[in-house]
Structure formats: structure tokens, C-alpha cells
Image (cartoon, each protein chain N blue to C red):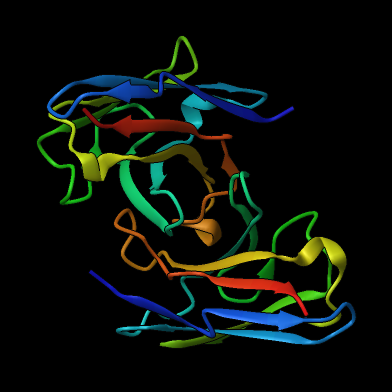
Length: 108
Length: 122
């Protein structure tokens, strides 16, 4: 299976900060990389697909980049509703997709 | 409104069985591949199983192969997960999720249910 890692595992930030989360795959996955946001007690929500495409309805402050093995999720100006856990997911080996361990973003 | 609603979770003893259901509404259920994803308490997301649109093809994670069975009833717009020989490590929230029927969203999950909790304990 393709292994996914994320860094950092958690971070503290303030409203208005620029936040960057990194995701790395154990082998090249081209651009088959998706990002999800999950709030406590809720289901994950798709933010970014195919590494850099914004899912419909997702604010433009979210962006993604990368290809091959290294990817980033950037929140350009953190808003109060963005405090959550973020997961990357590789879909290169679908249906056997795998998720990263998550990055928790909380309030500084 | 596009919606997935899971049911059927609960407390079960090790070695027991449980069947989860996921009712779909607001979209043409029979056109989409569907998945189950689970999340143990305080842990990350783990893919469990997938079924294609007409139910003719299924896939499973190694950890559940031979114990879990995914199925669907397109006439009832419902996805199922039959779980047998349950173990403590199967304890998790189980989500059903939709995979979009377009190539650029391959393997992504655009709609999720609210989840149903399964607890395996004596």
C-alpha cells in the first residue's frame, strides 16, 4: 500500500495567518491527491481534488499544489471556521486509497 | 438535497455480527461507486471497502477481507456493510461515501454520511 505522511501533526495559528500543511507519498502518485477537512464529531469534507482543483463551494483561501510525492495545502488567511483537522488522501491506487494521519489546526 | 444517512451501528460482542445501512437521496444512486471508510476513536481515516455502480465488483481492505461484505440495492437507494467475526479493533465510526462519476475526481469522496458508531466489546 502507498503510505502517506503529513507535517506538522498539529499547529497553532491565529485568525488571518497563512497556514501550510505538507503531505508526502511513499511513491509517486502523479496528481492523485485530495485534501479533506474534518471538524469534531462531523464527517470529512472534500476541499481539494487532483492536487490543486478547488471543490465546488470551497472558499478560495484554500489552495493545493504539488505532484509526484510532495504536496501542500495552503490556507491564505485563516478564518475561525477553519480550525479543524486536515487529511490528505492518495487516490492513485484506487480503490485502495490511503489517508495521511492528519494535521490538527487549532487556535493560538 | 444530496444526502447519505447511515444506520445500524451499536454495541456488539467480539465474534458477533452487525449490518450497516446507508440510505442515499437527492442523486441517482445507481450511477455512483460507493465506499465505506472508518475512523477509530481519536484516530485517522481508513478505507474499508468499495462497490461499483451495479454491484458486480467489490474491493476490501486486507484487515476486513473475508469478514465484511459490501452490497447495494439500487432499487432501494441503499448501501450495506455486513460485518461478521467482529474484533475489538473494528471499533470505529463507519462512514459511507460517494465517489464522483467523473474521471478527474477518481478516488475522491465528495459526499459523506454522518457516520454510525460500532463498538465491539464484551
